[in-house]
Amino acid sequence: MRTEEFDYELPKEFIAQDPIEPRDASRLMIIRRDTGSIEHKIFRDIGHYLESGDCLVINDTKVIPARLKGRKAKTGGQVEIFLLAEVEKNVWEALVKPGRRLPEGTEVIFDGGRLLARIEKRLAGGERLVSFHYDGDFNRIIDGLGEVPLPPYITKPLDKLDRYQTIYAEKRGSVAAPTAGLHFTPELMERLGRHGVVVVAVTLRVGIDTFRPVREEVVEDHKMHSELYSVTGDAASVINETKARGGRIVAVGTTSVRVLEAAGQNGKLIPGTDSTRLFIYPGYKFKIVDALVTNFHLPRSTLLMLVAAFGGKDLISKAYNEAISERYRFYSFGDAMFII
Image (cartoon, rainbow, N blue to C red):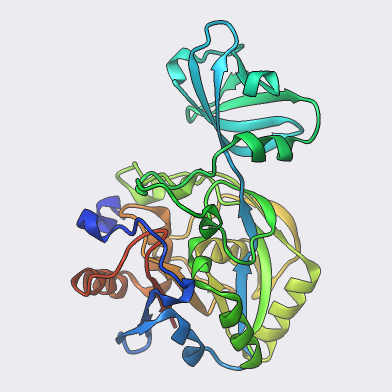
């Protein structure tokens, strides 16, 4: 399958630069796989398309202030370290700038020495292993000096950084938000609960593939970045019970899909913590997920390929063309679709 099959042209003015207020006021495209029909609603209407007994699966990950700006210990030159994943205690996989001027052994100072870093190793994909040295609590330190990394296509500063977190964000570790969840408000969640919809949380630490387009010409040649996920025993029990009685598993976002499908075996969800490189593209057979809430994704992205796998490549292409003609807002702060 050719990567160019997942390309499309989007006018820049359709890239949402600001989140809509309130969160659930964004538009919602309803896509029916059985008939191929498309409807246009508002996100707060999603309850009309959910049924009592459905299980809504959210990703409760929380974005960390992963962008750290410091200076070289020897020359004072400016350095940026973008945290990706902690591979062992105080050692992180990271992106660094300027990469060519940061060889192994380079030491970096942050906030006058409150935090120190050392470039330990260059990895095959251009990332670095970086060790950190400090006194105190690492999370509190980076909360004080780091920046939450907004996607590169958002060029306008965000007034309220909590708008790039879901209302249920809890488990630290992601470098990007699970953006389909940004549309939910406490009031909407409460209404869904009264309607009989069960909400279950899983966790996936969203990694660098969220920002990266697929560069290989052939889709199957792309290698996914590893991401850590976790499913509790209670969450697995609720999801498995829902499947057993014929209820629908409704994934909120592609990250929830990857957890459910990575941890699914023989139609059941297996609890535990593990890492996954699962790459879902058209031809994949879904084991757990029955419906999907998702945003509109970048061209040539693994996220778009996953959505095409779930909704059908031709139907999703039709939906994207219609979204453009209807002037939907795209990407992280944009509108959503519900594929049923």
